[in-house]
Image 1 (cartoon, rainbow, N blue to C red):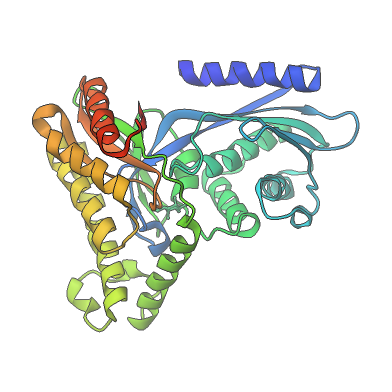
Image 2 (cartoon, helix red, strand yellow):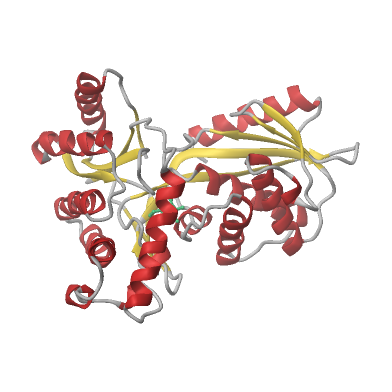
Length: 375
Ligand code: GLA
C-alpha cells in the first residue's frame, strides 16, 4: 500500500469515528486514473492506454443500527440518507449516483443491511482523472467485502459504467472503469475496447515518469460536448454502414462523410493507431517516440475532435518548448477534455524540475499556478 493510500485510509477511519461515534468495520478503496493516450476511442470500440494514479478514494463503513443507510461525502461536506431500493427517487446528483451503485452492486452480490458510509477522496474532481468511476469501483469493492464474494473484473467495470449511464446520465465508455478495476500501481494497460481484453504494460521507472498538471479549468460544458461527440461518431459509423468506427481502417474510407463527421472520425482512426504505436514504443523502451505520439494525439484532439481548451493548449506548448533537453518527452490533454488535466511523459528524475518550469510558465500567462503531481 502506498504512503498516500495509507494516509487517506487513516484519515477516512478517523473521520468515520468522529462522525458516527464507532469504528468502521469495512474499508474499501479505488484509485483514480490518467489516460496516457487514446482518448474518445473507447466508445468507438478502439484502443486506450490508461494507468492508475497514486490518488485514491477510500470508503469506510459499518452496519447501521437504526436501519437507515447514511452516507457522508467528505469533499462535499454533506450527509445524506440514501434510498438504495429506488435510487431514482433522488434528484440527479451525487446521492442518486451513490445510491445507484449500491443498488446495482447489491442486485448482483446480495443485499447488504443498511450501512453508515463515509467517502473520502483525494482525486481532484472534474479534472479528467475519473474521480466518479473511482467512487463507483470503491463502493462495489465494499459490497464485495461485505458479501464475502467478488464479481469478475469486467462485470464490476460494466456495472459501474451502467451506474454512470443510468444514475449520472453520462454515456461514458468503459475505459475508466476497467482502468480502475484492473489497477496495478505504476502499470498502464493497453485496452482493446472491443474485445475488452487488456495487457499490463509497466513503465520503466529508470527511464520515464508520468506527470499530471491540472489546469483547474471547470469542465462545465464537458457533459454536453461529450454527448455531442459520441453521437457524431455513432452517426459517422452508421453513415459508413459499420457497427463502430473501429471497423474503419483507411482514412480514404471517410471521404463520403460530411466535414464534421470526417474530422471526428479521422481523430478516432489515427488515435487508435497512435495508441498501439505508443504501447509498442513503451514496451521497447523508446520513450522519445512514445512522447512524440502524445503531442500528435493532442493536436488531433485539439483540431479534429475539438475537445481541448486554451489553457491545455498552452500547457502542451510550454511542455514542447522545454523539450526533451529539458526532460519533457511528450504532453497532451487527458480524458474527456474541455478543461481538466494534461499528462506529460518526463525523463526519469526530472519531474520536479519540469513541474516547476510548467507552473512558472503557466502562472506567467494565467496569473495562477496549476496543481501538479507525479502519477
Ligand atoms: C471520459 C469517459 C471515458 C472516455 C474519456 C475520453 O473519461 O468517461 O469513457 O470516453 O472521457 O477518452
